[in-house]
Length: 104
Picture 1 (tube, rainbow, N blue to C red):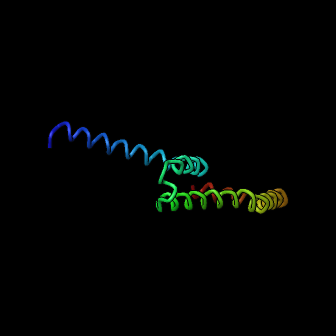
Picture 2 (picture 1 turned 135 degrees about the vertical axis):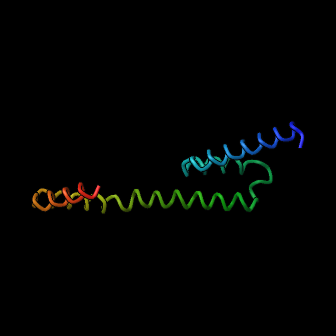
Picture 3 (picture 1 turned 30 degrees about the vertical axis):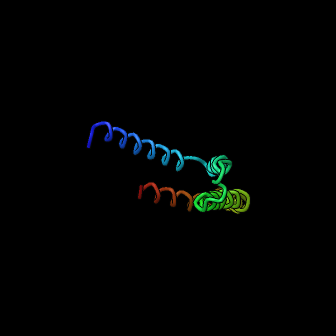
């Protein structure tokens, strides 16, 4: 293989890896924005892979929104209940903390 072809191949692989890494690190909302921008390219809107990628990104946004809006009250109530137990029975709290400290 010639040196020029080898350099081109390495450049393509490095670029593809960088784009993949950037895609994986993007938030779901930014992924949706990128997919919307890609859909503006003529002929890309009907691409099956673009539709599938959009559905995956949207499901991620939906699940994050459900977690942040639906479960926050339950998490907050659980934290309040645990705090109340710790205040009411300090001996049990001390035993649990020493047990956790010993296993760490």
